[in-house]
Length: 268
Image (cartoon, one colour):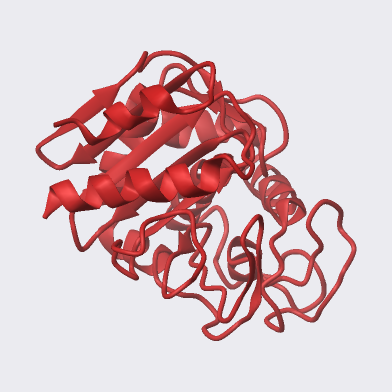
């Protein structure tokens, strides 16, 4: 039975989804339909930044953002910048403050260091090599990309079996950075700790959460206010992409967790 069939009863107008393994995938809906990603954008931007590090365009520990902050701080939401603007709300490494503004600073840095407009850099570094032809960063780097399930399935497979980036780079990016930092996970309240990698939220022992309680603590990914999510469970060797056109809200919390329960259950 396809665990994604439950999405047909969700209160959304349009949805598409895929469960990805190294051996294939299970799908639901129009895989080529393009959706707004909202903050799932950050996964793509983070991957572009990691490739920029590998290429020597930037360094993880070079200064970036507020005084005392680095590229690593920006990627890990530990720079002290506020959510939507560049107001400094804490010292670097003091709190986990979820910051879209930090990703804008990061994109500007990569553009300045590479001499390439960041949207073009991201397309050349990530989208084109992975065949993500319908994916575009059309606005700010924190939350304004569009993509399809077909494209994000390719990206999820890259996360499961890295080819563009070195596996050690991906392993570092999906390992907790600045361990022990508390913070608010948007939509789910304060988490102690609020674990994050380099652009990738890490499930850890968070509760409540948008993935399944049966997902391994090493599960990583992101969800978006557009009603979208992508997670990869490296212990189970699976990833899940769900895109909808209904903004995240109370409707999503039980349905997303239940769907992930079913996906994880069928993978065991």
